[in-house]
Amino acid sequence: MSIKVLITDPISEKGLDILKQNNIEVLYKVNNEIVDNENLLKDIDGWIIRSGTNINEKHLLKAEKLQIIGRAGVGVDNINIDAATSNGVVVMNVPDGNTVSAAEHTLAMILALSRNIHTGHSTLSDGIWDRHKLTGTELQGKFLGVVGLGKIGR
Image (cartoon, rainbow, N blue to C red; front, side, top):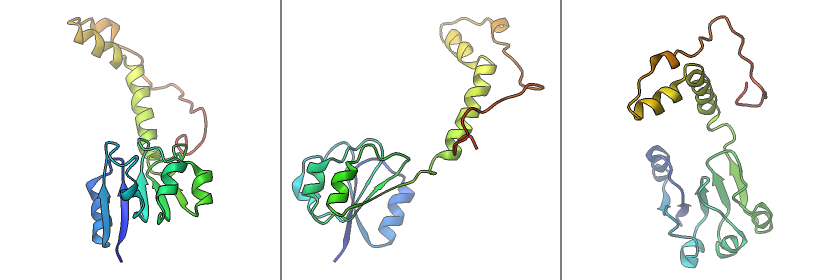
């Protein structure tokens, strides 16, 4: 008996390889190919999604063998948790999966704003180069505060 895992949002090749190396049959169906495919849903043991797939009660009723839903990301607002629980399906997510990337992106945006990168890009795209408006502000010697000390703020 092989384990079948349905994946309905893009994931990395590395992630797919890990599943395949562990003798898991991967059904990689992105682009909403599965939403109402009763035959496909009734035979899956696991379902991996990101933010592009919504799993509702109708899907869970069709997925008779489903044991687990893995959400590659932080939230689970796109999964009907009550229906999953009623059907004995475990729902898991990866709350720390992109914490470092989000923090680094925030710092990059702060630096871009302080140096007027957005203005330089948009005006240069229009054929205008007014470098005096692009000087911006140096951060050296200034205090930078972080509002909110959740996982990303830390």
